[in-house]
Image (cartoon, rainbow, N blue to C red; front, side):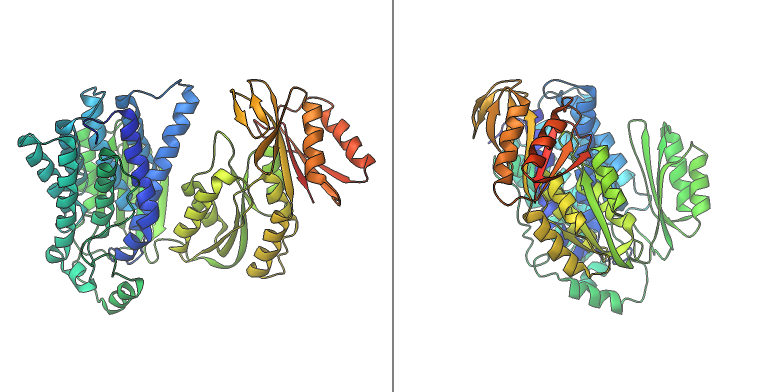
Length: 552
């Protein structure tokens, strides 16, 4: 059990929270009955944290920092990224919980978090979440956060350890969540606990998991509230509901407005934030105006989009404006089928778009997050989507995106393409005249039937299936495994090609990367054609892999 948390364990806290939300978000979505029964609280919290982690990692890579950053620097970056990535009011409130932790750590320049610092962080997060809401309502995530903070402070006053604090915090959060239907009639009527509060419980459970050095949180057990809640029960409640003053996500008041408006503002002083909250409260409901550093996130439900934007213009130019119809909280998908495929380089992206698919940049060093894939799926606007991750390490994000899109009424079929060449082979057999099921079968078969390999250069020493390698060695990859280690790229490339072509190969696709030596492709092409194998060359422009091969 940890006595204090350092930068690594705090990072694990965030990662475990994201993993827990990924596993449990469908159940949390099913609890979501207000302002509209859109079922997106868990998904919004998950995507907010997923994109914040991605943005923080990308910024660190951009700065070229060696080794892990300082704890105070990393949590400050995470706080800003969470606010910028926030989706819906639940995502904004989650960003304020992260902000509270950041303010304690960064404000006090802490290098580790002990029990008193953890209690201060939890309490500051609860305060920031509550103050961001214009009309806070009890029986919501705000209540659960307050109860958890009070219990954490009680443990510290009694001299408790960090482990005792987190264990007590989980118990307090569960108890407070179980009481939310007693505080909010709409929850009692629907037979559910508050969705945002359930997401907050995962946040605290993940903290306890890390402190006690256990695996990711996998279960929410709050009597029978969550495990027995079904989409059917929520649908029945939604059908019977006739209106009235109800609440969720921390808000008080009836919400019958047509639009959700969100945007960012830069460098708004505290008095400006307070005035903006008051102005927006006159225009609509569910107002959340929250800040992290020089960035302010605005959220309001209103009928007057122009007035909501005008209120922000008094404090600066609104950025990243998003307006969503509240009837469904997402544009109703159109009938039809669209394609989304990941691309590791600009040339690959060009080929993808030529066949009518949407390309999402993703590859080593910058793999697409679930949030980016969901955004691409939405842009297609269709009811059914075929998604090609084209990378083994992007498959999980693709599966998560498919689950998130399902909450919006979209069906996403993920093709098991683990490399660019498999994805290109699958796209080649797509037929717009066939049904989605027929295309998925054909594309899956084409991807699976494509033997694949690659050539790259070692950037560190290590032991591979092909033997030990040193920095600068040429590595041959076959079916995702490094099986060849050499010093000459021509020789290694030939060995890879010989392995994947074997007997009976009719077509070889070569995707040429940024570091491919001059003349290499011509030499390999001549060799393949002499063996009566057709060669297709694509200028992929991908980094890290001078050559990608596919054999059909």
